[in-house]
Image (cartoon, rainbow, N blue to C red):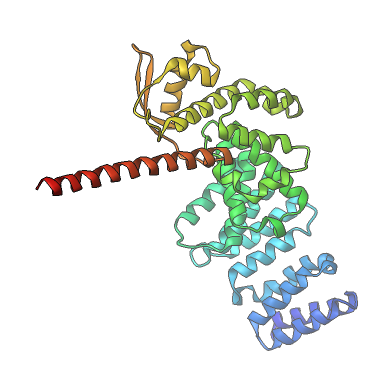
Length: 388
């Protein structure tokens, strides 16, 4: 018997003697599978053990004294997943970092990039809890470089990366990147099963605030259609959900009503001026949308009309339109002399029920006009046939 095998035997014997009766069958199975060198089956057995609620106090010892012996013979991503589970049982953050760093060194990024990303993402998460933002960002950047080089990645690996990236940008109060990475994280998991009710509420709340406060976010479509937003319904944050839909419709009247509740969410109260400008931009988009498809679609929009729709002084309209152009929310030109805006395109976005109904009315109108043109063309052909 070699030294490694003897060391494993000593560990398993010790575990059998000290583990509670409910866990002893695991160690008996470990011994059988290890002796038979059935590494895949042994991997499954270890994961089953780690999922047992009673196994917590024994996990670190199992990983260091047993799994370490055959770690090179099993799938490295499964090994990394084991390491991530086991590190949750370590109370000392320094020891957690030590366990993960040691395992990361033993896994090659060239041969096992997914395992490397998972461990590095978990390390970044621990550093973030420490408040080490610089270290977190360095690890996130390394993960991103490896991810960019891969054609496909398992969902759990992507989820670990996007979660820590989102959490980092939340800590930095960078709303745009947080919004993007948080939605990507949700796309990699099943929120109903992978998050508890409190986590879903927190995630929906943070996403809603990021959508409102992000200075590059003017299309809330993906969030408005995401089931995570339903977590706000019936909660103390339901009014924030309502505010998102108000912004999407560009309804300044409703915005001013809900704005009276900003004191319930201090960060919105602090950014009231920015939010007022943002709702004006959304109102401008809505004004252009209302005109597109109508018979007057080619007619320019006067500054006075825009001022009325956005509730701004007329001398501020030009700056608003220029802001919308610079953000690529609209395309067109300004005629400063005649105080008119010629808008040729508006950014696509998710439509509410009222907007869809308006679109249906326009479609019916377009169909009727097309029918009249068709009848006219048919009558001209008929007339031409008769004269001939």
